[in-house]
Length: 114
Image: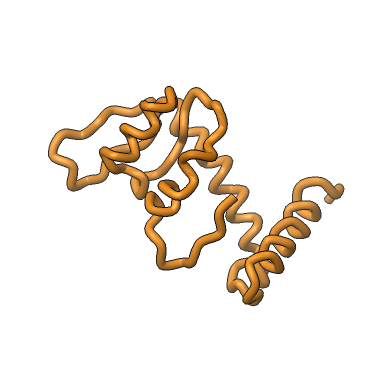
């Protein structure tokens, strides 16, 4: 897990974590991760990239639209976490305190009966 500053580009953060990726068949990501070097690094590890092409790409790269529709589940999870004001505005200065707040929120949201 990598907690980066808010100004960091998405695929630059992924570049820091690419060696720690688990063995998976496909990676679902949004347009922010559309870079040739990132796709090549995924292909090197045998991971199929399900990333829509950016609008400014001259030759669009096709992706599996049926698989990409499943990404909304991840977006919904982040939306539910951001309902917690402490997480949405990031009151905590220390990364370990912020991660603890995320763990508490995830526990309350997903594992305790509602």
